Length: 357
Image (cartoon, rainbow, N blue to C red; front, side, top):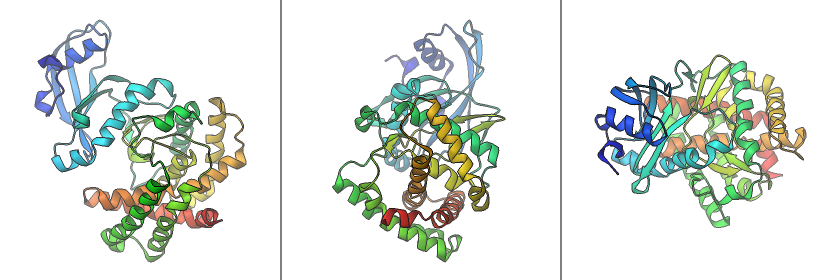
């Protein structure tokens, strides 16, 4: 590997020679005269930068800016999420061209050192705006998101190859592993309640504990319908631009009941009153989009059932994230908002009773 194309470790390693080299590796004849590097995003699990390029020659009409993702500068964070880095790179290497969910164009992906070093160069989605997890979203944004989600689930629907896909980060296979996750989930619930304190009211804390107590039977008795899952399909991982949405952050790929992604989105992104008013229509929108991808033998009633069942995904991912992620003020506020909405949805929809039945 030449110095021009070695994987950058720090933003100072991102030079015009490096950018020109990786663009050439994707088939472009562009000549990069200069590149400016500026940080973007929160950097919770990695370092994300906007690259602004000045071209000496641009025969392929490449964009003037890109988004570059690198590992986190914090060694502890990087060591904890290398599996996520491998998952995201695997998505762009092996999945992106097979699905129709809207994603940024990928110009370069490279990974080494078992995930400790990687570089992911994507099209800049500006002026698209990241969703606000704490504020929540409105109905038009929710419709865009649920319809887009069908573009991931439909092309991977009940395809056995994804069960053993090496890029999975959130896959639990076998009864022992499922029971282990159930035990971890119970522990995470207690840690989350302690961390969030008064941000989480008594009723929501009780719902969280009850839901985490059911993770093991929820997974052991899941229907045999499955698809590739985003795993963390929420507003912070969606970029909105008018009537368009782009989906990012593919570090939590898994396989399971598709209703988990769908319920996780509505349960974390919509205030309870709006969700209760709109969720029937949103699930119907998703179901129609899923059928448009070619899925058959999946009726609307079954889709609604899977949506109800999938709502356990909200406290599961939220509690695991809260308990074991680096603690920040915004992160705690975000997790509290997600759990408040999701626990209300679980109670409103009777999800716990459905699991125990």
